[in-house]
Amino acid sequence: MENIFNIGKIKYEGVSSTNPFAFKHYNPTEIINGKPMKDHLKFALSYWHTLCGDGTDMFGRGTMDKSFGGKTPMEIYKNKVYAAFELMDKLDIEYFCFHDRDIAPEGETLEECNKNIDEIVALIKELMKKYNKKLLWGTANCFNNPRYAHGAGTSCEADVFAYAAGQIKKAIDVTIELGGTGYVFWGGREGYETLLNTNMGLELDNMARLMKMAVEYARKQGFKGDFYIEPKPKEPTKHQYDFDVATAIGFLRKYGLDKDFKMNIEANHATLAGHTFQHELRVARENTMFGSIDANQGDLLLGWDTDQFPTNVYDSAMCMYEVLKAGGFTNGGLNFDAKTRRQSMTPEDIFLAYIAGMDTFALGLKIADKIIKDGRIDEFVKERYQSFTTGIGLKIVNGETSMEELAEYAAKMGDVTTKKSGKQEYLESVVNQIMFGA
Ligand code: XUL
Ligand code: CO
Image (cartoon, rainbow, N blue to C red; front, side, top):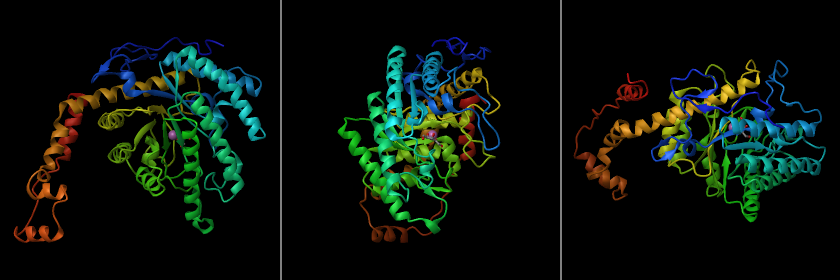
């Protein structure tokens, strides 16, 4: 199956282009700070939104046909594979990410599910070779099936826990088989609706047990990539255990999982947790837990996960600033966990949405690189903490002082005030100047 989409390859035409089917900023081979753009950004296509999402919402049926001309379930899922690779090829996207249930129809039994997966994986493998595409990460959908109503790793039923383990084992096998460099845990239903029925201690211990077994199994199979937790505070459950990056790091450290796991940070999840996207990236970076990104954006007027394609350049610039400061992606990348709006129902909209998202991040990368090269922000921050580089400040940082010595030091000083300005407005104007020349 070829040319499902009647659109040619998307090319870079530069900022003056008004061709909707062209990149204005994403120029894959352009060198930014010694590295091609494509390696800085490592774009990935999300299989679930792109090949499966049909615009269904709580009030209405789907508005998009994602059967790609297929009639039987297997035919539909095979056509999804062809469509996925055609999209990646035409949009110049090197990576993809999937859940087990995105790629193959669910069977009656685990065995049947796995058989379907194997058949599709053979085709995916063939097309990965043909188009030179890579798997960024794989995951298991342990939240859709009604059996996961109480959670998967945090279910109150041991049989459900066991079933989830079986499903995750297969998802790990497939991730390894396809050369994936990451495996994601997003705890869709790993949380609670009411504490009145919840043994939180057991649920958290069990979630850690499942992750530990998953790591042990994958490492035994030779998996060298990263495991990721993808924090999200709520939705579908009222409270999810992986609330935000700080909470997830605390969990990983408590259970000794922090060496194998990093964070997969999603913009819309950050804002649902009451944080900025940049905040979550910073917390991960400061804890050497930065791993991968689910790029999208929410609507600040809505309290749920809208998974919109990212078009906010300020956010993408601040995101890429954190990515550059973290030393860039290693095993991770930038997965567009985003869907076209229910009203954007044509196949062209998929192209336009990816072009918008990719250009937004390419522009963000260029701005972030400029902010760092400009140096005013970094210099300001450095100067702000100057007092910790000499004298008593240096002693504090080096752990060479005590409460007694500090009290004695303080007693000698009389009143202590600070006249140092934080200069927030000035710094915001520096960013504006770099972005808009204003
Ligand atoms: C849901 C979400 C998931 C994960 C993978 O909010 O972000 O699609 O990215 O399970
Ligand atoms: Co996500």
